[in-house]
Image (cartoon, rainbow, N blue to C red):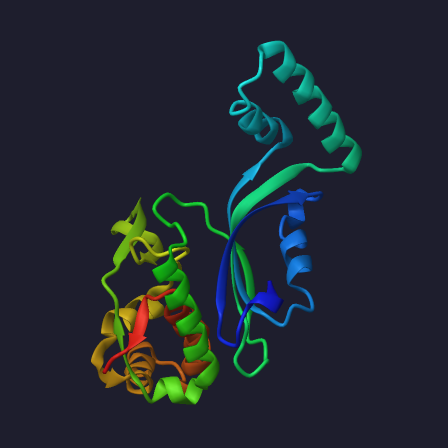
Length: 238
């Protein structure tokens, strides 16, 4: 693929890959990316066991039941001999950097319904990665950030004083992997990101409210902020 891309060019490939260790399904895609010099976003959408994978293809072969059974046995014997325990299926989106410097190669699993990697989502993901690479934490703290239309999912258990929240997750509907877990402070921080106040000032206000050191809260909050930007949950307000 690298030889077919101009600087800045992007390619999207639908691919299947063998998995020989269920605890490391990403080994083959990572191997593909080695020494390519490409930025990449690899998303596994499904992981099929050998029986399911072989059955999927044989169902479309249009062969007799006896022939399908025979070919199924042959394929499963091949998989077993090759040490293949599963087959990953997903999308590879790669880009040849304009300056030749690889900025990211992200390999992850996103299996949720409605979280397909569309062209628009892939382009936006690359743009957000470029934005994060170009700005330091100090730069972000000086910016006014705003929250995209999102949904806050909470789970609560009954307690002595009523319902007590045990988990909070903010989701951007339709965004691949666009969900991040929040604690009490990050939940309040995202709620305050309305594009009007610099991020650093918001964190300072939260630090006073919770009685903690502002610099320490900066350091704790920035990974969440960067992940929220990467997932299209936060953006720089104009």
